[in-house]
Length: 160
Image 1 (cartoon, rainbow, N blue to C red):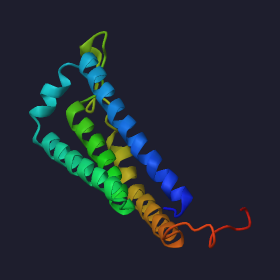
Image 2 (image 1 turned 120 degrees about the horizontal axis):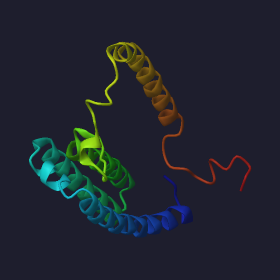
Image 3 (image 1 turned 90 degrees about the vertical axis):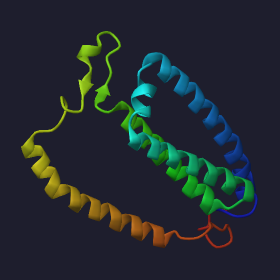
């Protein structure tokens, strides 16, 4: 987050870019329906898809409200939840097909076909918590170090 002229210019760009993102999401949705006409029907039958859709709707409301009222944290949270919701709805709609074959649907790869073996999963069960802990610690350190708004007067480091 910033303040002053950079903040005002960024807020204007955010509104325009999110409008373009919404338009491009519509275009991608239509293209996806052309390539995979069964995707929406499969998604509607899955109750987890509805939860993801609810998250997407709440995120859009938070994002638009944050942009309209200039509450940067609300817009930031809304944009992150929107990305998470879109990824979740896509994953639920696609499951179990990971890579769809447009030439021969029987050649599509499913989650069961590409699943890792038991030894790989055992290794991942050991290393994943360690990696996650390191990533979480890094996130906490960086978040505390760079908390608050960026100020040209305070954070110029001699470059301005």
